[in-house]
Amino acid sequence: MDIDWFSRQGNARQINNDAAEVGIKHNKLVIVIMDAAEKGTNPKAFSEHWVTSLTHAFLDNPDLHSEPETTQLLKEKHRALKEQNFLCEVASFCLVEITLNTLEGNIVWLGDCCIGTSTHHEVQWINKPHNLISQHQVTAIPNELHNPHLLTRSLKARRFQQPDFLSFSLDPTDELHLSTDGYWREHLEDNIPLESGEDDASRLTVRNIDHKFIKQTNEASNFFLIT
Image (cartoon, rainbow, N blue to C red; front, side):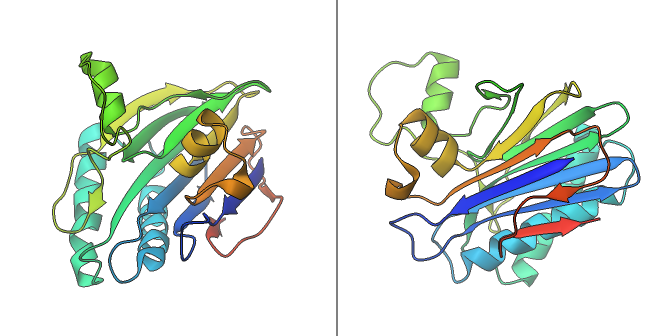
């Protein structure tokens, strides 16, 4: 499979706090992408710790996790955040685990990172971000919103918040896309050029997903690979 990782620091950010990790073991692919806010003492380390911790944890089981198993595993990893002194950090993340021989998978997310698919066309996003505008669309609540992109759920050490979970399937020709909101919303939806974006913008693309050999097309300090 071909993996392409693009990540750019936003003009209004002191450092790029996005991160991603890809792991492949036996017949399973796990990908985690994360976008930490500029809060706390070390949001960059927070992103790197969480993507690595989850990738290893979900690779250890060759089968897909059920929703109760996933929730329990996330609770265990969440409890360790205080031990790592990530007390004030806030982030969004998406995790996808895929069985490569069937291309069946699960998605787990908190916040506004998105996962989508495409077949050489426009990306179709699979999950709905946890923000005010998405909630209002779902519940049909009218009126203008002061901050429509404000998160309604996120990853915080202070309190465990229930992630969303869904199952999906891929075709061998599908491309898989994982994106932080600086890319899918600010760049793609708002048509802001990447060089003008205020938020960190990251996108991970996987092609030829039915091929188990990984070909990485670029390297970056905020991208990690386990093979």
